[in-house]
Length: 423
Image (cartoon, rainbow, N blue to C red; front, side, top):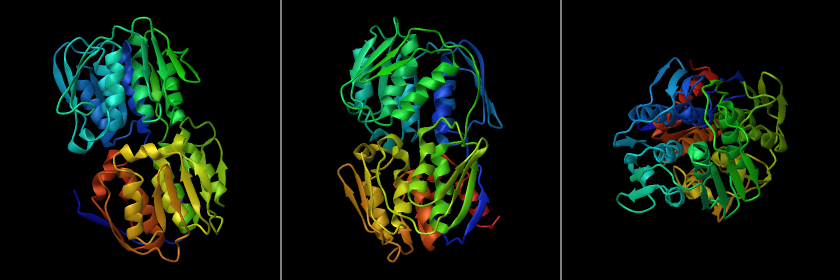
């Protein structure tokens, strides 16, 4: 990997920025396609590490899949019957979806990952699979990868916490139709990132499983068979936050095609937050445009449902004229990085007046004190891209380990060069 990437100050922008397909939609669609009888086709597939890890893992599980120029063809309907080890690299979402998927087989399947992924929590999911009658054998320490599972599930009722990660809930939902009698999930704490759970249900509908019900602390998934489908993956709303934020902090106007009226992803709401801070936001059938309104105002916002955007919001808030409070996101300390502690520590290196609190961040106006400097990414693509946004405002920011952006947007730095007129 490159040791660092210098980000220089940008002037006012006038740009249209295409972003990759949604990795959240793509990974859900790949799982459903693997379980669907017949041939499914997915277009606008992103080329990030998470999606590549999912495709590679499905091949290890003997699911035929070919990918060319962002188009995937999946021959689904069955998993292999051999004992295998699947390596997910750094892909958290991918590994959690795979762990549940692997539990449908009747041979021991081990899910493993790189050291940072091994440090992330898996206990809520492994405990849930055990409740379903799946044999769960931890490797080095309980609740962490590597984990070996041997299925199939023998029970259709499970309870788990909803306030750790919605990925655990989504992974169970997608195998629910293959559980005898369907699946009933009881949540023992409030659900976070609700739009991602609703997105899972929507993708399942595309593959012929409708009737998923979510009421209060209960999610019911019917017993059903997935059907092959043709799916176009919409642009990634999380990735779109970075070019839209560039308009807010640097001035000017940025348009992202494909995320206009009717966008499915909850993270498309980020543009509305920029609107609340003083930007002009326009949506139509073809995309969304954010235009700087001059002075940015701080906001008080609960981001529990759009937590991936906390780093982006934090750097925009640092450029505002009044304080911002980000709430409801204490659980993001267990993401690729400690997205509260690591983020706030690195921002302070750049002169941002920020404190990490139990459930979020307090950010005071910092435009007068922000300066260039070197910041670490902590194996976290979202920190790297957020720091690049702030660097585009102040200049002289050295982002260490910049290639970590390959997890979700391998072309991010090329995009930034293009917006700056350097290529």
